Length: 263
Image (tube, rainbow, N blue to C red; front, side, top):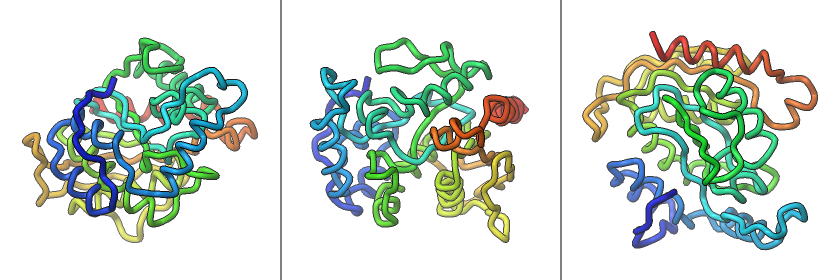
């Protein structure tokens, strides 16, 4: 569960940047993310969905807030997605939880030995991740799963700071889709890391080494080192139901991620 105690919600891009930058632990950061109200369109949408519930969930209380990352603070693997699903994470309060995308993702993490169970249904379901943290580039459910450029940029400091705090142990990032791929490269560049030129293009199975950032040192005592970035098609139904993404394809990416994280 997310700890309590946030005194003030971020209501602007400047607030987000300030509050994210001041967070020195993941629980503090998670707490501030959950309280954020910086993007009016996203606030209106996430709260509207939480009231006008899908019929199958009409008796459930929706989370209806930004969704923090999930997983241990010493993760070696980060799985980065786009944004919470309106009736998935926006309902349950856990990233990639309560919808078909999450079913695919956590089943794959379980097969790879990175999760203690193949399902993720809610905050109290007993799911534990091993050496892996899952987060989204944008923390609120957007209409049509499409955050605007301004919303993406406003939210970016939350992701940046989360990855900064994970940097001392981070070895591998798995980007689910082109949006997450670009977000990962953006974080590395903003932190002084070396991004190859021309910029690596997203593709399923793509792999690139992001070299160490020599100038940046995180508050937990370590800088951003070399990170392996892997690309995978997103686990959305548009990909899984059409066969564009299959279980063996996803398993191969996570098998590679676990090998790289141990090297």
